[in-house]
Amino acid sequence: MKLIDLARPLENTEWADPPGAAPKIEYLPHDQTAEQMLQFFPGVSKDDLPGGEGWAVEQITLSTHNGTHLDAPYHFHSTMDGGQRAITIDEMPLEWCWARGVKLDFRHFEDGYVATAEDVEAELDRIGHELAENDIVLVNTAAAAAYGTQAYVGTGCGMGREATLYLTERGVKITGTDAWSWDAPFVYTAEKVAETGDASLIWEGHRAGMERAYGHMEKLANLESLPSTGFEVICFPVKIKAASAGWCRPVAVMKD
Image 1 (cartoon, rainbow, N blue to C red):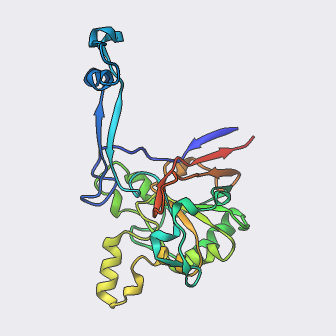
Image 2 (image 1 turned 60 degrees about the vertical axis):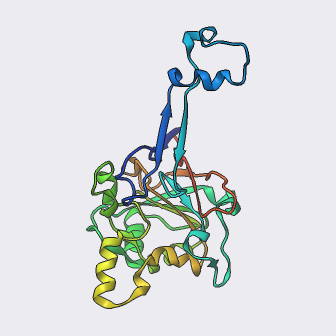
Image 3 (image 1 turned 135 degrees about the vertical axis):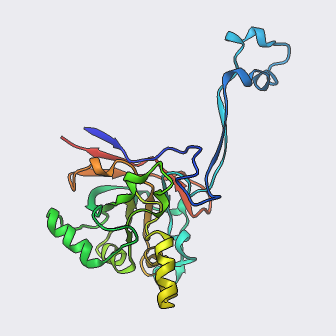
């Protein structure tokens, strides 16, 4: 059995999120925390500690949507499944988060392209895969190659409403992308909305969860190293009360 890490790290970078939305990590190394440790142990001096060192600890300020994370239906809208209350990340069924995986290779689509149901069907035909209940579908876009650069947030194709519904009506509950968003980069959607006046294009892939509940992962890594099929995905989110998303460390399990 081989495990492939599908997560990006949480790190101090302005390029993995839109401006102003980056995480902030303060690193407190051993040589700065001895006094912090000693407040619990009256009468002990710094010289009594090995090397005069305290502990290493980090203080982090971040959004539930920083780093690799799993979005709950509540992120997309207050309702799901045609009007029911949308579930939050702590309510996501764990059974959704461990299942057979399949990868769709959409790296050839241009930035801002909105993938259709026909695109999904054609890729499934190409790789010879028939979707089954609870399959976890991962979308490999051009965004992964831009990670770590200022271009990342605006790179890659997105998944449209009909493409998302194509998956969910076949029993898919969890999807994922290596891009910043399941939808196309906002800069391209904004241009289309300005040209057409059609506000339904905004977040259309996310909003598909209003019709049929699902969750998706964003900012995945190493999808290019995966085969199209023949693996499982495990992607349990951090359990945050009543939250719209939770950070996760997804892995692909390759079986011999």
